[in-house]
Amino acid sequence: MSGIGLIITLIIAIVLMILLISKLKVHAFLALIGISLLMAIVVGIPLPKIADVIGAGFSGTFTSIGIVIIFGALVGVLVEKTGGAIKIANAVVKLVGKKNPELAMLIMGWIVSIPVFCDSGFVILNPIRKALQKRTLKSSVAMTVSLSAGLYISHVMIPPTPGPIAAAGNVGLADNLLLVIGIGALVSIPCLVTGYLYSLYIGKRVKSEEDLDTEHVEDVEKAYEEFVASYGKLPSTALSFAPIIVPIILMALGSIASILKWGGALGDITTFLGKPIIALAGGVIFGIILLAGTKRMGDFYEMTDDTLKVVGPILFVTAAGGVLGKVITEAGFVGYIQENAASLSTVGIFFPFLIAAILKVAQGSSTVAITTTSAIMGSFAASDSMMAVLGLNTPLAAAFTVMAIGAGAMTVSHANDSYFWVVTNFGRLTPQDGYKTQTMVTLVLGVTAILFIWLLSLFLF
Image 1 (spheres, helix red, strand yellow):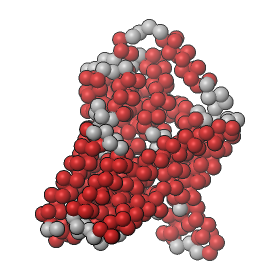
Image 2 (cartoon, rainbow, N blue to C red):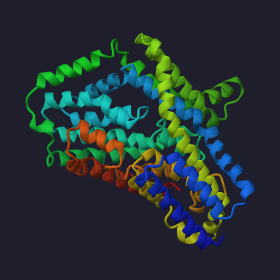
Image 3 (cartoon, helix red, strand yellow):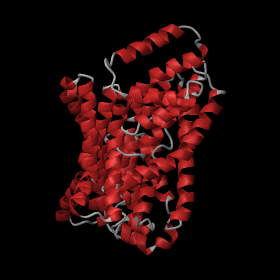
Image 4 (cartoon, rainbow, N blue to C red):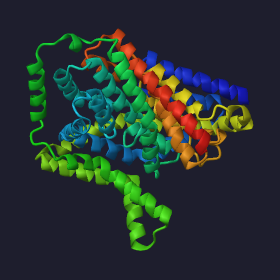
C-alpha cells in the first residue's frame, strides 16, 4: 500500500477504535485486537504472517512488563488495605500543618497514588479531606481539586502505577524504571504548583454541598475515626512508606552499580536487586510485612486474587496495544514516515501528547490512552519505530516521551471517565461544577506538563 494510503488507513483505524470503545462500548481489548487484525488485512500483510505478527506483539508486552505491573499493583493494594495509606497521609498533614489543608491533600494524594490507583486513592483519602475541611472550615472544593490533582499527576507519570510502567516498557525502558520515576518526579513539580494554584482559585468561585453544610461536624469526625478504627492496628509510618521507598532504593543501587561498573559479587548482587521485577518484589515483601504487622495475613490470598482480577484487564489491554504497534510497524507506516521525517520531526515531543490526549478525550481511560499511545511509539532503540522518526532515540528522550504520553492521558477528565464521577460524587459536586473543577484542573495539569516537558527537551536533547 502507498504511503498516503497507509496514513489514511491508520487514521480510519484510530477513529474506528475510538468509536468502538466510546460509542459502542466494546471492551478496549477486543477493539484493539479487532482493529489490529482488520488493519493487517487491509494494508496487505501476508495472510499466513498475520497470526505471527499478532502473537509477537502480544507476547512481547508480557515479556517486558507483565510481572512488574502485577507486583506494582499488589504493592498498592497492600499499602491501602493495611492502613499504610492513612499513615502516609497523616505524616503529610503533620509536615505541612492543618493550616494548609489544600497543600496537605495535594501532597498526600501525589504520594499515595504512586502505588495506589487514583480512584482508590481518592476514596481512601476522602474521609481525611472531609475531616480537615470541617476542622479548618476551608473551601471543600479547593481541597477536593487539590486531592484530585495530586492523585492524578503521579497516576499518569510515576511507576509503579500500571500505566507509566506499561509506557516505559513499550518505549524500551523496562529495565530503567528509575529514570522514568526521576523524570516523573521532576515533571510533577510545575504540575503540583499549577494544580494547587488552580484549586485555590476555583475554591473561591465554586461551592459544594459540603461548603454549605456547616452542621454535623462531630458526625464527620466520628465517621473518620470509625473509618480509621476499621483498619484495626495501623502500621508505623516508616513501615508504611517502605513498600514504596524500598523498590526505588534498590533500583537506584542497580543504576549506581551500572554507572560505576561495579564488578564481582557486589556488582552481581546490586544489579540483580536493581532489576524492576526484583525491586518491586522487595516492595511486595515489605507490603507483606505490613500485613503481618496488622495481623491480617489471613487476607493475603484474597488480596492477591483481587489484585490479579483488577490487573488482568490492564495487562490484556496493554498487550493488545502492543499488537497494534506491531501491525503498524509491519505495515510499513513507520518507513513512510521516515521518508518524510523532516516535516514530522518539527512536531517532536508534542506528537505522543496529542495522540494520547485524543484517545483520552474520546474514550475516557487514561490507562488505555497511555498503553495504546506508547505501543504506537515503539522502542527508542528500534530503527523502525516512531521514536526513531521523531528523533526520540535516547533513554532520556524516551523517558520524556513517557511523560508526554502521561500529560496527554490526563487531558482531560470528563463525563466518560470513571475518575470524574469519583471526584464529583465524593466531593459532592454537581456535574456542571465537575466540568469547572475536575475537567478544568486536568486541562491545566496536562498543558502545564507538556509545556514544561517541551522546554526541558530544548536543553536536554
